[in-house]
Length: 407
Image 1 (cartoon, one colour):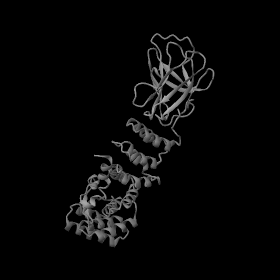
Image 2 (cartoon, rainbow, N blue to C red; image 1 turned 90 degrees about the vertical axis):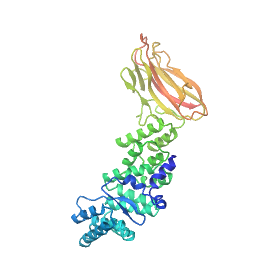
Image 3 (tube, one colour; image 1 turned 135 degrees about the vertical axis):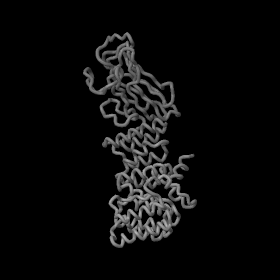
Image 4 (cartoon, rainbow, N blue to C red; image 1 turned 60 degrees about the vertical axis):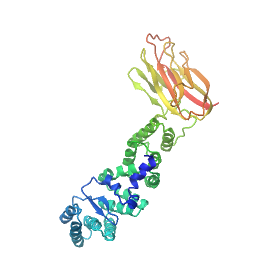
């Protein structure tokens, strides 16, 4: 099923249910204590009951759960009696509303739900009922507003409602107004973002939603979500979406450059920032080198007989001609590291440049071209040491000042 159709089958289980009369949306929601039929369209909604509810309201709940018309009328009478005695009882107003809907009095049901919401916007059952009626009216903005209010009530709301929103978010018709809500930074946005990032398959509508959520790269939890989202998009070959998310979160442009070529800054969001290997016998370390030019660099380490990529970065160089230069040193003939640039998905590199054999810093330069069908590239640094390595130079191979400019 196409993503758009899949998404609309989810949240337009809210309004689209109206024409067909099938309670598709609430199949997902209907894993709570009870389900009843409410309102003019007979759509099922879950009932959430507070533990501190008045005993007679709880009795009414059990009657309502039977989904029997006569039981619903009895439930209404019980709840109405409680409400007359205690007009500020949200639970009584909610139960009376839902029971009225269950026996077909949609007008009374709506009025009582509106009254219950005036008493408390933090009652989850009331918000779910209001979502249902907004759906019955085909009013998606109002339905989403009540989703927002409901999700602010606590953990139970997130467990109940987020799966529905995630499924529905495949639809652009739902995602656009939902993004407007997320841009206001509701407290539940991080939970929503986590659910998006861990959802499969990834939908094209998810990236604008994550951008709207404005994940804070300075917050450890949100930073982790951002990194997982960017990496997941790259793995799915959605590099343009990943780049859009990276640029929004970091405020950095990606086009036509290698980032942090002097290895002096923090690599915050791989693979657009450096992804540096750190494994026994093969890896690299950022930091100042203890020989000239005494500056930050990436020092490479490979045990005898080991070789492999120790640092990589995903670049977005537009088609055209470029010039690369970098500074390297402490390289012996028994193990020459190299840098290379390869189009994403390709096997042959656009260039491969070995570090010069020298105990002193040496600059390496070369021209290269990016073809028109190469929208993103992998820049890699490879360490290598032969099995019988004997070092004729002192120190550990290093590289710094990587710079790519249009030729």
